[in-house]
Image 1 (cartoon, helix red, strand yellow):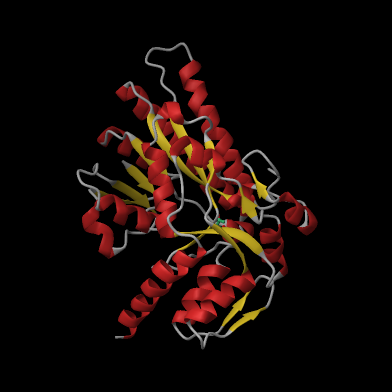
Image 2 (image 1 turned 120 degrees about the vertical axis):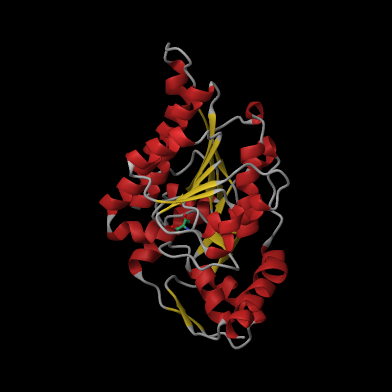
Length: 337
Ligand code: AKB
């Protein structure tokens, strides 16, 4: 198994979870940063490198038999707005390179490689707040007019996955094998162990981690801003459930997953309940505000529930009371100690 972006938030949670599985497959990780020390013993090989480096990917392809690729590497929505052309290179060309690696591996093995792609609610673009309120829970095919480079990249890569799943399978060449492309569209993710960088849903984890460290926090979005969220254990659960699902059960290639939708004010209220001294202010920043205003308040994940029995383990209450608050409090207690 190959995991890209392994040193990111989702990568951390995924490696931890995979290493606890009995008889887990050897894990090769690829990231531009060296993998966190604590995770190194859980993987077979750490490659520090760039998904844009074709030579590196060719070497990888000759050295390893890869049956599954979990592609997490990406520049997130806010970072991508600062250098959209670079984001396009990393997010799109990087994905094409990995899809081609999957094709080559699949053809060598005579069996399609599973390609699990982490997409995002950024693929959506709802045209204004009134439409956002009226839309309710949006399904996979609605409102696909993203306003960010990251969102455009994610949506296009979903299409590329569909293309690669068909194209090589259709060619009448010997050993023609496609890619077993599967994609989850994630909402905003919140981890108790890591703070994300460069995203626009980051206000939620940032306010929580700031409160746990007794630091004041100014949210860059308005109080009423509402998008769907999920905690990291559920994000990992979704990736692994989709990867494990029998191909014939899947009726589509791209699936929404979600857990709870809350406004920034409701999140702040939950944070203040856990950390009564928390100082949370609201100082919206126009550019970032317009990005989250274009994301739906809720997504419909009924296809994932139906096809691969997706259900989050954590609703908002459990997410805060059983996972986020105790784990974060412990994390910062240890750092202080
Ligand atoms: C971001 O904010 O860019 C990401 C995402 C919603 O995909 N967290």
